[in-house]
Length: 213
Image 1 (cartoon, rainbow, N blue to C red):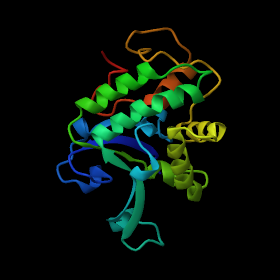
Image 2 (cartoon, rainbow, N blue to C red; image 1 turned 90 degrees about the horizontal axis):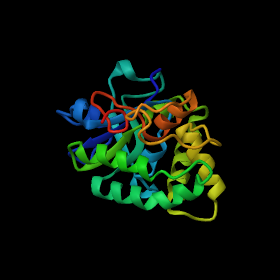
Image 3 (cartoon, helix red, strand yellow; image 1 turned 90 degrees about the vertical axis):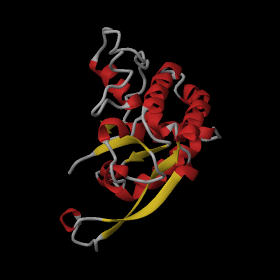
């Protein structure tokens, strides 16, 4: 089973635009993607109120045996301007939660560039593939909701950090790699490249500013 997540920018307030929005062009509409996780700074653009549930008609070939042609799915969806404001607001919280690993301001600035230049006024994450391969699928949405709630701060910093690490699959306990690690051709280990992608994702069908100048 596929297990990708896609950060998308779309003209209309629609979940899963790759299959639900006519004319959606992944070359420009998919900002970045990743495998088996939801990158940390993607999460920082959303809050629990942005989790939207929709019902979708699915081709019979894509259905499980116990499904009837319609599938309910929940994913983040918010206006782009608000997403970027929430990214900015989350930075002090993230820099506190991950103080041992280092500040994320430079990484967030590059993500902002990528989101701003993508067409469309709404931002969403297609994450049903990651949810589908989660070890305990029933815990994915509660974990996601709790992690997003923690981005506004609160008393359960340790719990928020743990949930964000679980969703993003970061390897904590080492300094975060520089935001321009790849662009500047810096020397780094495998864990650094891993963490850069778990922070930001990677380009899909177009370049992203943390991988190409």
